[in-house]
Structure formats: C-alpha cells, structure tokens
Image (tube, rainbow, N blue to C red):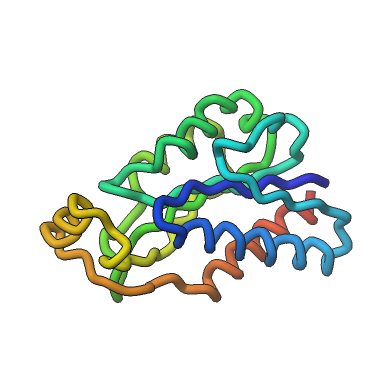
Length: 169
C-alpha cells in the first residue's frame, strides 16, 4: 500500500504536523501488519497521485483559508481523490481553548468535493518573530495568542485512526 502525506505550511508548523502524521502512520501500519510505503511530499511536488492507494492532505489555515498549493492539489486531483480513502487536516486554531472554534469552511468544502473520510482540525503554532510585518498586524488585530498549541498526542491519535481504517480495508 502506498500512502501520500502532503501538507502546505507557511512557517513550518504544519509541515512538522505532516511529518509526525507520516511517521506515526507508517509505524502504526507496520504494527498492524500492513506492508506500506508512506511518502511525504509538498503539495507542489505531489505528482502521479493515481499511484497512491490513500492520502492525508492538509494545510495551515490563514484568515480561514487553506494555502493555495494544498487547495490546488485537492482540486486538481479531485477525480482521483474521489476514488481513494483520503483524510484532510487543517492546522491553525490557537489558544486554550483553541480559537476559532469549528471547522474552517474551506476545509469543509474540500472534504465534500472529494468525499474525504474525515476533516480533522488540529491546533497550530504562532511565533510572531517569524511573521512578516503584515502578518504581525493581522495577528495583533485578531488578538491571536503567541505560542505553540499543537497537541502531539492528538496528532498521533489521528494518524493511528487513519492506520486502523486503512488496515481494516
């Protein structure tokens, strides 16, 4: 079984989530007796997607939207994704409890477009020091809290649930 993990990340936090999903997914599939190859590709490098049996696709969320490379990958390959088990993830809510609540509308739209098995929303990270001037202004206006709110146990649970679904058929 070949599985693609492809996420778009602007400042690296979502890429780290994607890397963790891929690592946990590969380990979990192996422990479940599934011979699997898990490939991590940036959305711009994800080609020949029809060669994959399943996928986890995602993006960091900015102003309620997926980054263009991830959105383009889902939309460009929608016909293929409709015939494969696919999970989507969005990274972005910040704080404790995470805000904004609920699913980003664009993630929901993309999940419906391809018939994704699930769209999981995971907390993100904001480091103001890594932001450009305009991004810092937006973060201040929306009162986004600074810090790393990623829940690595939740990321591992998500990857484990994907592995169990794939191992079960």
